[in-house]
Length: 207
Image (cartoon, rainbow, N blue to C red; front, top):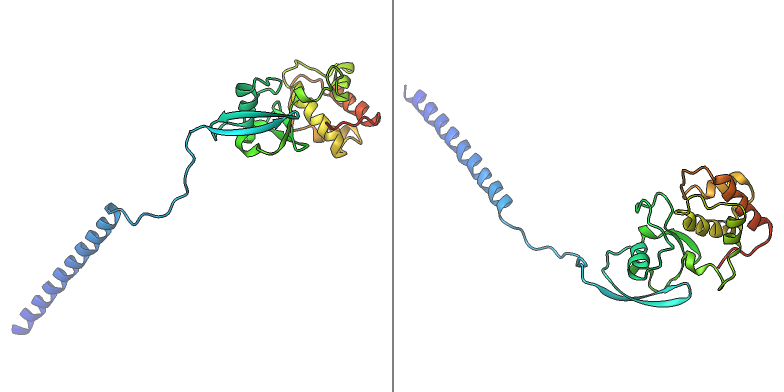
């Protein structure tokens, strides 16, 4: 009888011990979740404060005071009123906002203005030499490659770069390398013809 009581007592102690341990772990976990940990070093996030920058556009230096989050496209259109560069999808899919940065074609909606300090930016306004149109502009007119006109400036900027890159050896190659500039007007044959003319004529397509 005494042995049975001891076993019962031992079992009761084990149960109590298990409950105490469980409650203790629960309290530790709850404390850890509700108590803030040590402060980790964090990267400073740029705020919306405007920053003074200078951009070289079409050979001219422009002083700007823009928020760090402003795209190059918005800086061109909204701050500098260079509205020849068009805003289409604003997601880098249509190519209407194509400009040249250090000679490379870039969708200006996908790059920030502050990222282009010290670079050479060319927009559609910078192609012509005074009253003399760039050969690609003249070819677009000659071949009626304007379509509705909205995406034309981006098409011309890409076409200029495409010829300079050496991707105008065939109609298929031109279409492939112009595929980043979308249009639904069905006038691609005219654009291809304009590009072929500039490439075949030995025109220096660069700016």
